[in-house]
Image (cartoon, rainbow, N blue to C red; front, side):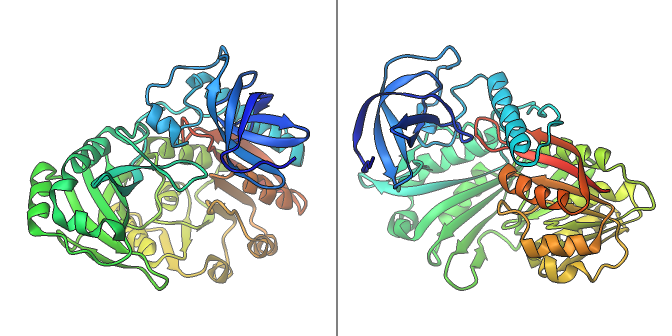
Length: 438
């Protein structure tokens, strides 16, 4: 069976939900994933993207409603695909995520001792960072998000996952940007705006992601600074095939401060940092508690970023070595250790795999890798190194499960696994696990 883009299919029924929170429709063994369609609901749908194996679609007309369905307060946000689980109550979201983690690990590695999911105490307005896209419609600059599986930007009036202060700044910018010719003249060169905010220190940072340098007038800088005196800086990030260049417009400061537990953390404009600060603190404490570290332990924190995990675990152990490929993040990490008077952390910039064996005496490894997980080469290096315990934090449970399977086949056992709802209203799941050497 073959479908094409924009094709209408009448009166189909979702038999269950995919792990992405999409309704699963089966037609002659062909699978269609449908946004905003719950199990048991019927609808007319429109194909948005299709290949030989499966397709993605959106609802044109829904004929019935599941008892689980909630009314959507922000239809524009739902249309973008940014909040696929917002049609479920928060308790149903937690149940959906927990059950999927249990299913995945039971099916793939025969592990059936998953702890209950750690709920998010603030399931809306939790993000400390968001990227919004811009385009010109009817001679006017609009802000929005890309509709899933399309190149269409859907205008947004409220970004309900982002902190309220970020929303306040975006709303002001959206209402005023068309008054400044430098933006109107250069809109084709601007891809997006990234907003970072620290609730603890009430600091804003704006990054303009552009294809070329844009000259921003002093009038705009003066006006936005007067409305937002807590705006630390505006960075123009010039994206190119070569190394990105950036220019700071207000001053030489290119970072903001946040806090994880007792530690103050400087975060460079382009450094990775968890988007949910309060939930991150709870996640790290779960890791520390279940590693059961003591003052004799020496820890390697691979993919350490700005050092937030290393600094959190440092008071409990003898020494922590942080490894990170991004130079600016390592500079942040070293600075953060000094700010917090932590003297038992040492950080190294460079390829994690290249630097791994330079540390000879560690007995515990902590990893928080990118979504792609650990490379086979790095897993082989870890197996040769033979750490006593491995702490694994991941935002991709599929690659986490894949990697843990390799450790289980090579002399490790999984002692602890718990999902954490870091990204409420979305299908994404953070997970923390602890393995030990048999």
